[in-house]
Length: 456
Image 1: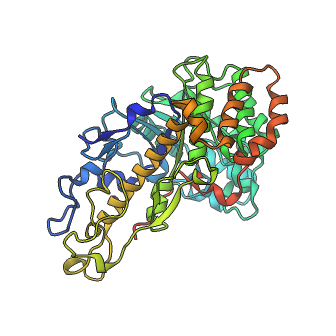
Image 2 (image 1 turned 180 degrees about the vertical axis):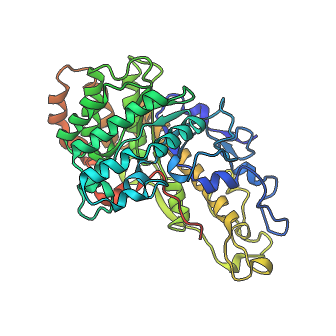
Image 3 (image 1 turned 135 degrees about the vertical axis):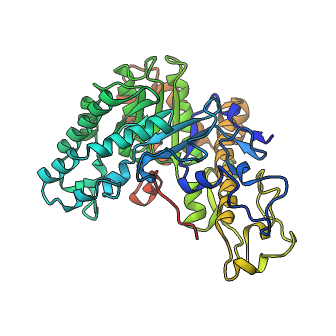
């Protein structure tokens, strides 16, 4: 049996890697294995399935999976669909990004519309899309995000979304119709998180006032309602929702979309600790596709952050993997230079291939599966250790954790206890912004949960 990281997360906000469909499909079986191809001793491709509690490498019981990666809702054999549900929790994404950009199967015709009324009518006619999304989420996930319309699409003149010509009100009205649809057609196999959107305080409040009437099983914080708007925005919205009984028993999950930073991992745990004082079952989660993007798009893996008193060490930094055919067929002479349960077993000829049927190649699909498993472990382990440093022993934390982080953690505990929390947020906004300010457009790439990294 491998390392089981799951029990160590019980007191912390949990990270959900945004699992890609090609990875999930290929680690579910050993069909890709070639006996002539070097592979780490003692394991199979199925051991790269981190959701599997029987993996000989490591197990972690959480992930995100997106309906936007699939053209239909037909059953598929993969590590997510066929997982041990008693040992795992999957949050399903409804494919809002793909719907927003007009690539979701069955929505392409919306791009042909040139008027607001035409776009609204075209989406209204997408009943089969909504049915397919709801059925897929009910079949594959334990929690699922509702189908929110892309408020982000109208914020940029460069947006190619067919919905960019719609008004905020129209997008909200379409979202409410989606909520009504889910309320009518949900089957009880998954729990639903109502997605909150917003790009400024006005439309955040407008969105909340409309969708809060549809209380499902929890909430998801998207756009500037979540980390994109900075910590003062997250706290403002969480505290406002708390005042309106949004986190009572039965509404037990809160998800922040699109972030994977050690600093934010700690902050979400700090918020969770306060919300659990009223609802002990409440769980906060956060997600990103970063491990898959790092390998598939940027051809890198990631280093463990050093996590010292210096805030600059609390970052995930890329590290290049040696992918070169000169390392192929070297009989294990060169060890993989990074540490993880898989990294300890790998040599560079497990990553690099050449000759025979691999002539002219330097890597294949198995190369990318191996590197992603390692990179996933580094992300999960790094966020776990960041939380353990801050919360397991506060006296030790004073010696090892940056003062900027401890100051914010203390403030979060304080602001949940005061009646006039709005005044406290305003007064302390400069302190919050020093580390957790509103992010720029370039940093928002992780928000794309349905991203499918190319296999080089």
